[in-house]
Length: 511
Image (cartoon, rainbow, N blue to C red; front, top):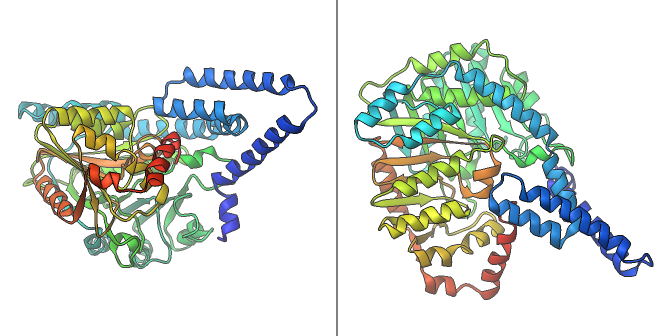
């Protein structure tokens, strides 16, 4: 896909068109002989109506401020972008399909009331587990073994091994698949062989995430190999506001026996086979046992979201997942998803709960950082109680604007007592949060508006799982290879860099 085509298929093209309209509006305002009131009065009226509508929406305040400022300061662009992104007819259809798919899957999910009662009897806080179970239809499981990967470099060999063992079904759902990468070609060789042997192989990928790195007919190419394939939100120039809500999840399920998830995509930089932005630090987990059913449910609900619900195989797949167990495993796992269309910010709620209930420490690894007031208040509340909060971010950015935006929060965080570290060898893409050696979240959810509000995401809540100690050790080892950012280090940044970061806060909700 050439650069021009890629531009036309992006929302930047729409922004460019509205910019030209805005410039035309300004020239008309300056040079037109038309009485000024015929321009100003309709402008004020349109802006007032849109602002009134936005003020009365149930939406996070950061989004409200951004939209009100855009409508007021750059009215024509603000009007068009606001109407374009808020009409959402396609999103409404997808929302209905998603809800129906979730309800269909939920009929077959494992009843976790006994497990939650056991957690409570052990003195474990069950508030977050109940929330995910009651609100998201995501069960909590025991009898599940977890392996934590401090580097995604080590995960490919295990993925290939598990795929080779597949006998019934293989599910893959990823934001990015680079069709020419060694990682994907290695996986595809096994998938093709298994599909020919009668294994039900399904692949789902995000249309925007794979734009330019997979062929236009990639889905048809896979189907010719016997692999069932669906593209989430195929890219359509100008026509689909739904492109802003991307499937950012990473899930592999094999036979209901084993599952993988984490921050990694299917491209060579994630396993450091090629170098991009220095050393790539990513993490993941492998799950054996009853907890795999949670990942199976999440995949099936998204698979049927795109095409409506048809559930003859739900029972087969979910029951197959639930029958596996690891009797010697300790602790609890709760795979959970997050949708931008249900009005429930499960990813943000999970992080806020961790921070609000921490007693000793919280260590956070994330590639992007642009938070709302609820997360900022939770960080401040944690530090004020004496909790050791450490934040690990990239030392080498993959994108300049989000990097600059993240750094704009440094001084505020330093002032409230959060310790900030930048990973010196390169880019941190991991999304892990670990607390008190008792709870951890590993998944795809970044600490930024896009992940917390706009993307489809997934993660696993780990409670009293022995491998939480591995996550803690990994965080400390990463800190040892990072530089501490204090007030002096922040002040040493060029003034224009710090200023630009503050300006980006204006559009933090949309970049």
